[in-house]
Length: 409
Image: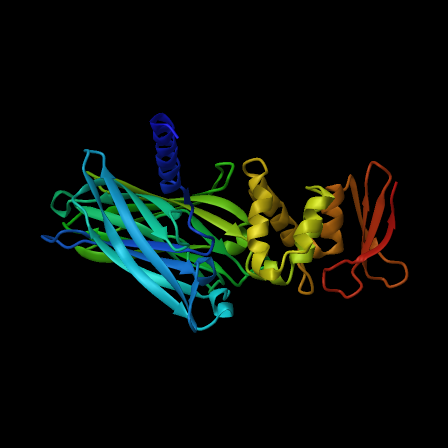
């Protein structure tokens, strides 16, 4: 082999190595990244970072009688002014007694680290290796580090707490939220609300502070606009709002919190995404695939039917990755409409007979409400321009209206 050939091979190896070093993925589903600034007058601001990863996302190696995983975390921070700071966040090992415990659903590993960054606007990149090799999970964040002496106040958040407690992970602090809800939530109109909280550090006396919370849907329609005027003493304060979840269909929402005085205005933004809960993957998988049947090829659904419960959430994500942007959100919003309009104590609206017919044929061209001649129960007839007719009768007096008769053309 000539010297030129050896040099070419070396350059190819270096190029492939550099590509491998840059390989990165978003954090696995079910992860959580919390961050919080500790601000005290006269002290350097401290950025606390708490990370949680699903156990099943880690790569374990067998070592004798146990299984071991290594988790490495690092950061790179760049400021607009050109400053740069990087370092190690943590290096930890996790051991499990057997292989099944390495694939356990619902269990997480948690790590914590603290950074000191000078005041300024920072782009922060968190990199975590939990699968061996060069490939990392990456989360990019925008962090504002204030200089307390130069500001009358600083607001951070939002944080949230659902009532009653929802299943699934807590959404990210400062970052897009992803809140899995119990599947039956839309059927319990008085059961749930979302408490949104922000933390306010007030360092000087102010006459008043104007606060407002705005919630917009995917079409930028304003759904909630709450304003208040508050009078606070210097110190730390937590301010809260209630968002009625039962009034929101599944889908994404933009949340904005504004705080203003005569001399300063600060805005916080977040994305509230209401999606399917864990019960979807275990209890309602077949029903969800039936709804998808009208949105995909039969072969694709055949493959999804064979997916075991532990892989269904990932299969769901893969299904939507090949669709146009916003397709999953529109699907969830339509699902919410069915749950809201056709749900009853015995059934989710989307799984009801009316929900399935509506999903397949759309809204009827004519709707008639009468009494059934035999049972004297409420009777609803849907008639379509195609000539198809569907008759629903409320046999159990519970609002379910199962399908009693149908004529299709």
